[in-house]
Image (cartoon, rainbow over all chains, first blue to last red; front, side, top):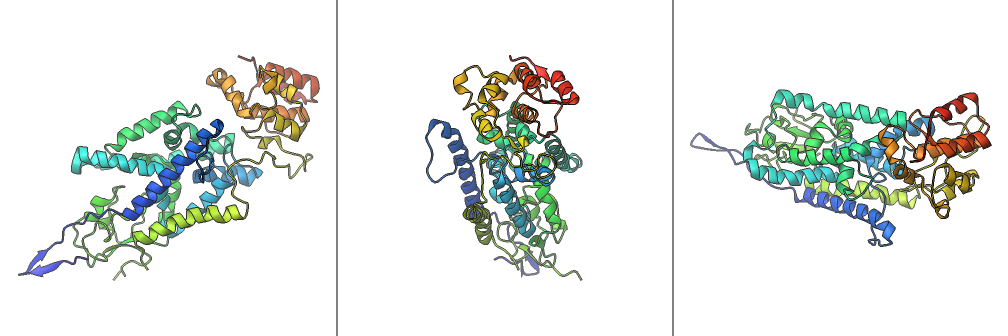
Length: 290
Length: 163
């Protein structure tokens, strides 16, 4: 691992690394394929054809957000909201356990819509180079980041009062994996199209500005056990961490990232982007404040 | 203590898939409804099946079995054209038949079946203003169910014709 070195009183700054996390990519591809195959199996069920060893659950049954929107109904009546089942609750609990430990890893390691947006980001970066993901003025961007909490409140309120899974009608994730189905509502297709288009300019636009589930998981960043920690004592202030962050978090100005938008992708760490060893890490303990 | 991507790449799938595996082994993992509605746990109907738990995947045949409402009443009431399909007709299919009304904000779907079943059997239910019933279902309820004045007023005001 590189360390800053001194030759003839000149500081030689190591170049920022750009190491791809193959582990994360592999997990993302695995979950994307799993969800795609489950969705395909569900569609094929009526024809009598099934893909072996893959379940044929509906997408609602394997979405942890279904558990979140069902909490009120379950607590007050003991019933699940339309189209959600015990499986949604179990996945919700697993996601919360992961979030308590590591933050919103569901967003960066599991969510197939997040993965899909990341793939589009590759194209966006090719088109716009360094300008990619930096088109939105900060003042507007900062405000837009809170939209997802409004979306969360709206979805939870409407679901609680109607007991219907209203989110399905605006859910781009559902549209992505069921675009062939008559069950997909037009607004969700429009939102998916908009997300695809915006992903060519902004990384993870749905996650940043609209995802209600990301809003829930983002709150865990305030108290999660493992956090992104930056050692200011060894930091050379090259801002490689800031540049690597898909969520545009200003990592270089903090020692512990508690930003509600961090998705724990670990791209900023010394393992991937930071050129100095053990400077940006995903760890329990940060630098001791003097 | 710090964590590297390689470890994270193991933890995430293990927790997610592990929870599925463990709960499957404990018979808690359910991705479909077992077609047995929950029962009322309080009030006058305690111990009886709760129509509010009827799902879109329920067929009229399954509702007949659980609630004792003849499939003919359900089929005729909700405008299913072919009597041969009464028993296998799924509640969620109503959304297709009544799609034109949904645009006007008048929904005939699984919620309507829940309301119909509850009123038919005299079971407690919270009636939603967005829920409508087809005219034959309303006529059946007026004929066969013991409705309160409020319920009668509700179904009269929430009647739609079969498209």
